[in-house]
Length: 297
Ligand code: HMG
Ligand code: MG
Image 1 (spheres, rainbow, N blue to C red):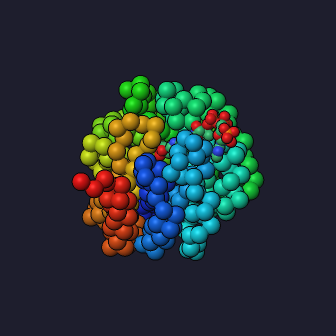
Image 2 (image 1 turned 90 degrees about the vertical axis):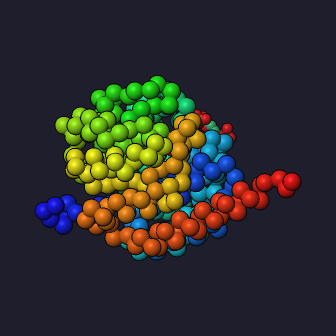
Image 3 (image 1 turned 180 degrees about the vertical axis):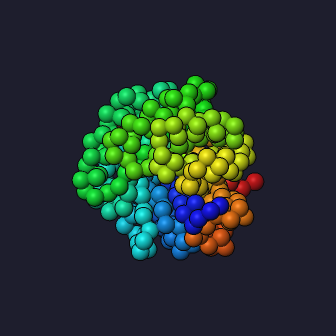
């Protein structure tokens, strides 16, 4: 690798949101706050901490305003949240989120199941969200889900991904996270997708968001690095999944991502031992919750 900027990788830690949103048992507020504080202490600079979605759809994220109010705001860290509509954006601005994210899909059925509208309707809904956020000085990230396969429709055309990504960039998103929501991707399919996307989009605007359902996430990161991507999403302890994508298991673990990147000579600015400690912490919390639920014999 020739220069420092090529060696530098941005990690977006999505564990407190993408990770915890899928937990069936309510995770205590203080545990969410402690987790986020440990993650910022580990040097993670982009932390998706909350999600202002309907609590009927995703009950686990119901306490997002409280989470945002209680975390330590580490200088230089961007604490972000999902905002599917204007109602979510208002809540995120009130909670002083540093960044928000709109989330669309490249599959019609997934869009309906996840956010209760078509792809076209979702884009119409996102436009005023992005506009208002930018007016408030808050940058917006865009997600495209199901970029390498859909739990309902199977294969997804790369052109469909490109089209949604282009629309999100055109409305003002600064970065597009390409979500392999169900972890169906391989290095080969990742390369093919990126070949199409990179014809029209700069690599600096794209992030890889891989789920590790079949253990392929790190291989897909490597394929993406070769294609020029330098932004990746991951989740501490590999927590996660999407409640509207049956079978989607955890996100790529931040620990695995950092290990792989450091081993290949990339810089992340993240302290591996402190991320591992955060991972042990949240595994212990979730383990205790599950133990408490077990009916004694
Ligand atoms: P809807 O039912 O069509 O919304 O849901 P609505 O506008 O008709 O409102 C219905 C009710 O929801 C009303 O309440 C609203 O107030 C309330 P009621 O009058 O019935 O009491 N509501 C809200 N409450 C709080 N915050 C809001 C909000 N909006 C409406 N923002 C909606 C549409 C988008 C809200 C719903 O479908 C939803 O919340 N979906 C979220 C699903 C979700 O969070 N999925 C997981 C995140 S995506 C993901 O994980 C993938 C990703 O990681 C990338 C990848 O891996 O691919 C990003
Ligand atoms: Mg995800």
